Image (cartoon, rainbow, N blue to C red; front, side, top):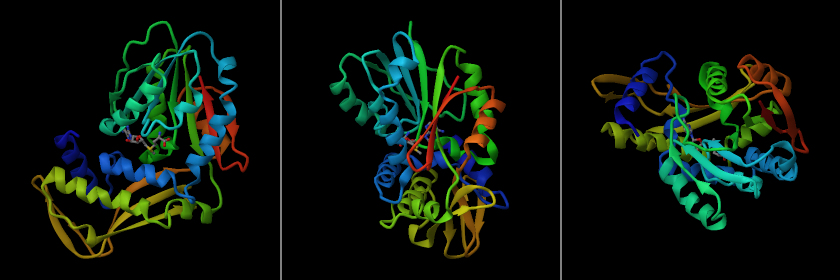
Length: 303
Ligand SMILES: C[S@@+](CC[C@H](N)C(=O)[O-])C[C@H]1O[C@@H](n2cnc3c(N)ncnc32)[C@H](O)[C@@H]1O
């Protein structure tokens, strides 16, 4: 983590009328572990539904692409899903993630299972410009799974997809996991698991801020609140202050009133139509869309 950039982004976010912290800062080693726990909770359907779709399409992959393949995964996390699509044509696998220490552990296991695949993990912040390693003579297939496209604030996802479109050669592809609008009760439960891992995941941000900014914030002075905002069609996750408190980030004094909220997580939900439109606005054409049996979740193949 670049402490200077973190400090700058914290000051910007915490100086706003409606305070925010970018969600990418959740992912230190502990945060990544909590996220993995979340994906295993019964209420958290996105991981199960996306895997259901990936299993279904695994037999179609050899018919979709020609020649040797490079899989490039943005925000790969535990590298759990890509395994479902690995076949003899895959020559390179490049997991890109902000939480590289966490990814590296999974890479060791993957190397043992697939010794012939060249695996090249890299630390990147995909919200900024990034470069991929040289992957000669292969069709590049990008993956952006786990509904991460929903995590952009202020509809920054169009800018992100535009930037990706410009940096990817027209011959290459992008698989993108898109969570769909559904019943509020299902969504509220998914982001408030009974065991409290979603809350722990968000509250862990307090530890990350203390460690990197020499603050002395207390987890007990905050609670997590997450719910689906039907009007905005997104999940909003907040850290809510239980008390009036003041602290400093660098030289900037920040005050939080009792019950004041910091927006720490957003997860936009889409319809097939709205996402197709968004992708097209960013210069991508939709080649295929797959759904799970309950139509909870979708996987888009863009070119
Ligand atoms: C929602 S999780 C999804 C993980 C995995 N792809 C899945 O489907 O379960 C987001 C992943 O992206 C990574 N991540 C979040 N923001 C990032 C950023 N700006 N740049 C690079 N990686 C990021 C996190 O470390 C985490 O592994």
